[in-house]
Image 1 (tube, one colour):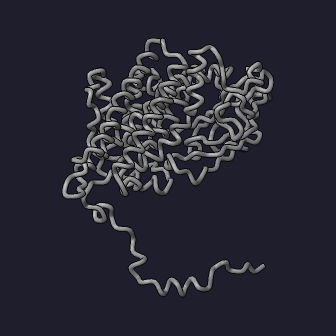
Image 2: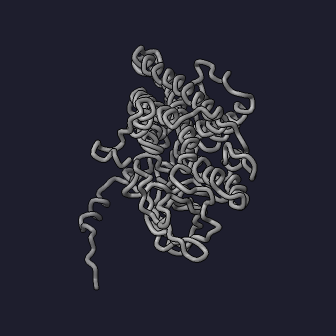
Length: 438
């Protein structure tokens, strides 16, 4: 069969009529806009106005400084290009691995055993330069690795954690499904016991790192007990299909995927030993939500740093933009948000470390910090004017990246309801007619 060409015969005539300079590549940003430095040379951190550095232990400062140094010098120069292409820069994985921060608070098995605050600071410093990079890292470290550390058997910890800690193998964490996002505990994916293992059937969606992960931590409903269990699935196992979700406007570097499981066999040894109900999953989410709360903190720090430098460099009406009252007002609003966000994030860490943190604490922290970060990004976008819509100057990229962060690990609304339930004693997640089943 001859397929008719869909090409318009006039296309060649139009192309030939165009001047040759229409086909030139875009100007380098430093040539196109020499008045201000782009984010490929990341600005120094100048957001610690209240000297909150004094709250940190020396080892926590050391962790922050080594992550900041790597992110500014080696990661920042390439991230805009990959963000625009929606591709993952695999060359950064060994560099992040060399920091020895994967696994965060996990002790032993090649993991660093950081304080909660130290681990949070590392996440923030990655997010300050690029939120996609921090999402990749937290999915691997604070979800997948932490699940194995908190719920896995001793054999599973010894088998998987050392390689994951070095980022020699990469993991993803698959809870969300097409029909179940906020209502994650109602998931449909099933695990059926068979001789020697389990058969998994179902579908997952929005799973970060899934297109290239070596290990997939999959949550499924045990058909015998009706409880949520966890399973470690290896890439390329028969029946497993992973495809990339395209056309995202935020966290474009993160390779989110759709996962389809059709009669995937998982041996008994890879059934996560102590993950027997959704309550066990919540043990992971409690700490993970603290880490996620530090992503918008880091992103907002980067927004402030970029705006602070830009307003001093960019001139209009014969003066730097920093000299205008309304710009100072917006800049100081971002700065004040950063101070408050850091204090809330720091307090969350201390509550967790002391064993006092409740689900409501974590939810309020994540939701409120994300809200303030959104406000800071909007103000930063305004301050940069036309350059505020260019990823080259960081703020537009952070503006877009904060939208999915505002939503994942519990939307703003769901997280406020978690806190609301805690302070009122009433659960309001479902319509009144359904609450009797909660």
